[in-house]
Image 1 (tube, rainbow, N blue to C red):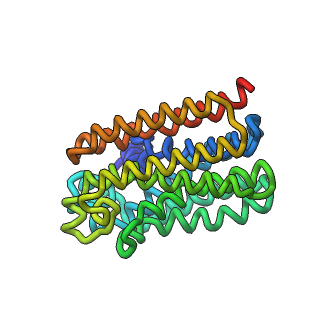
Image 2 (cartoon, helix red, strand yellow):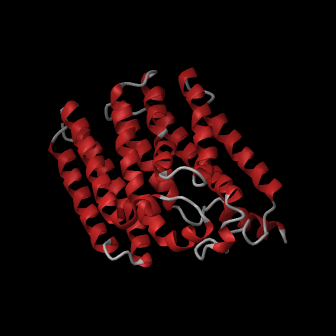
Image 3 (tube, helix red, strand yellow):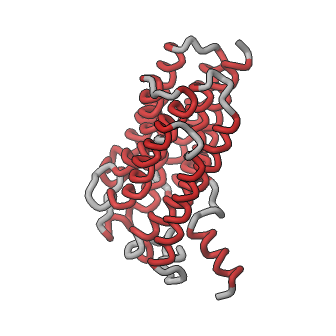
Length: 287
């Protein structure tokens, strides 16, 4: 394998060719940065978190494929991943994950000590999530904490502390992640049942679509509560209405549990996150 070919394999291992994961990780972090910064976050901090999001998502993908290396070859959607096909060794994967994590840690070093300390549980969450699928009936909830941990870190970076608002926002993100990752899990449910992996789609069973919609509702309800407590303007609530419309559109895609449509709904969650971010920005822009 040439150097260029190996770089391309590493790119695929880190899922840089599939940026949806970066976006789903980035949106809640941006919500937190703008809310914590009262509409005017420090731009150095913003860039630190954007770059850190890319690095940690990449590291998380590598760790995920390392953990699932014995399962991915038996799942139609993942059988061509680099570790499943043997193009990347376990030692290569571990070195790459460690390198990406060290780069991410280096980014937060200039920030305050609270952010640096929070980077430790953030790394633990990212590294341990893939293994929860072996014993935890709702690993998507754990993923929600891992994907949303940039929220308390954003508040810590901007304010030097973590107010209650940050934890409510994290909880809203957990419900959103359960919603969209259950859509994702429906795609693999048949294969996951065969190999014994636990997912929310399996746990919710025939109530999976109902659970997805309830989780969307809980996420939007918590966001509305935050807006009410912070005296947000009309633009923010209009964004929540748009997000609710997106969730209803997802219902039309997932209600028959067609794998291709469920995957399309999962990908479409980028717009859910973007619309809410637009609402947060509009609140500060028009006040």
